[in-house]
Image 1 (cartoon, helix red, strand yellow):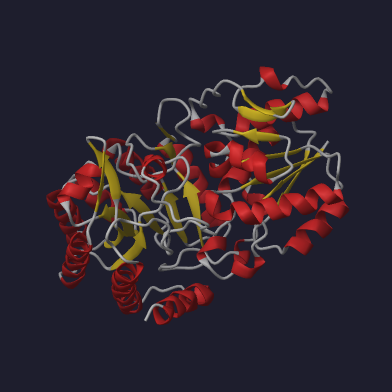
Image 2: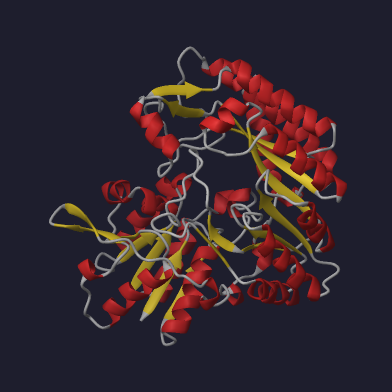
Length: 468
């Protein structure tokens, strides 16, 4: 049996952050299926292809099954791709997975001619589906973690239990990847670079976060073993990789585990390998800061979000302004740069009442970000709108109060997707522009901009000029 896994084709975005790395979720699927069913012929159609190229490759492969993975930002591209794949193979089963199908299977069935949505973690579910197709013995009702259409109605099966021990999943199928086809991180110290996944999920529940893949059941956070992570680092180093972004929603959710990971990587003695990661702005002991410095972590990405404590409490961030400053000071002490994520016009609900940041609140966040930059406590920022992504509590709040803009083409953090009472879009654009100018200035001053992403950088500049 020949099975194709694909990303929506994004050749037009090849030199942007949209195509910074391969789809590690798909690479994990392929490695898991190789382990469970070695006779399968598995293919990965990567995101830098054009639609025409993907369709030509499908004609050559003539697959028995086709699966596509996508997030909400790519749903329209995915639906268009599915339309053409269906024309090419009218009777071939098509299934999809990823963040958007997990959060909004109804939307997927309404807008595309697919057979099955995989909801949540995909490895075991995909194996059950493929095994059923192989044996010509597929009972969809017996497979946990899917949605499908029966007699015009969408049926959902029970939630799929999460894989308890992530070390039982083989390393992603990196052998399929030519790293030079990807741009890597926007900010980096060395090239080529790539990303690895050190954990799945997050123990917190911020209102803006859409994490339907890992939160269909508990535990909400699972970590890989430190030695298992170090083995992947060594493999990638042997493939020529010089920098790795360690992907975890918060690397420091468990500081003890973090230090163990750092210790195992240090044992490899890869002096010319560098690392980045995401951190929470609390739960950061000095012992961990030192361990990360000794492991060549040169930059961390910190979810600060707002300079208003009222807002941080409202969006369930569960950090304080004081903890942000404390974490930044420790990072600076150990010469680790900090990239701060900030969001404008956050919304939340309190006592059945819509709450949101006023322009004055957002200006306070801007002043806080600028102060951190000037003091050297952070080195750069990201500056976007709070965005109602399906699967998030923010999305449900926005729907409840009917503040999602009508006829919106695309929901993303760089465009205004909500209409707030008594706040004009002109005001929102003005503050957005200020933040982007600050972001661009410090991005250039950092000296670590990835100029291979020139289209991404040019897009930011065009947005600033357009908003005047």
